[in-house]
Length: 256
Ligand SMILES: [Fe+2]
Image (cartoon, rainbow, N blue to C red; front, side, top):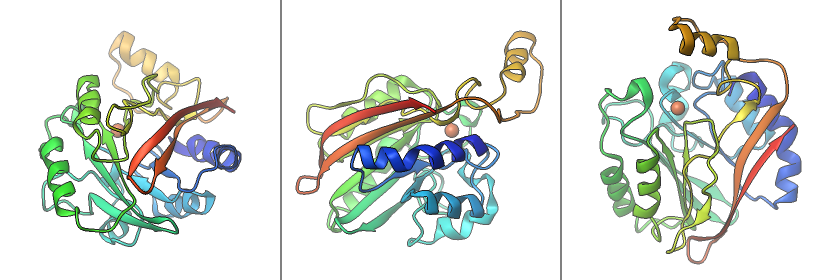
């Protein structure tokens, strides 16, 4: 989330990668640049910091300068897969790694704040199509990012894909939930992984602005919090590349 989010990742990632013996890092990239989408330069910056793959959300298409890389199957960044067909960008891509190919997919939930009236395809049916169309492509794991608002839908998508994919990682709330676990058939799941950015803020935005909005109904522009302690929210998932399922999920929530 914004400049502090980038700084948090820059400061924390190296040690966390070492501590948890991380091979591949994926990050949500929809709120990176001023909280709105991601610029090309921030994409390069985060790649250099150590992010291997970037998932998408309701802000991904805000920045048109990244449409080229969203369209390029070799660039590790996607937008939600269940946008209408003529939408720029790709909703799923493979990341080639030394261990094998990993399929990444982002799905948008059916209720996502003020975007809820925008047309999207059904996420459950969309992932069915993707799994079916990609079943013969070599891969060691499929990672699904579910970007939604409703806890019910975020829980359901985990169970719906249990045993079919390595992980279903929810986000969009910027607040981590405490339900990270391995589901009965071997899929790692969490309803919401949280965010990286300002700790004493409302989802990364300065508190006075949001307090006035909720208390007095003030219509105001969001301003990112730029100072103070930061939170680094993530999960570490141990995947068995032979089965494509998860062995372990650990929540990593640290303040730096
Ligand atoms: Fe979002």
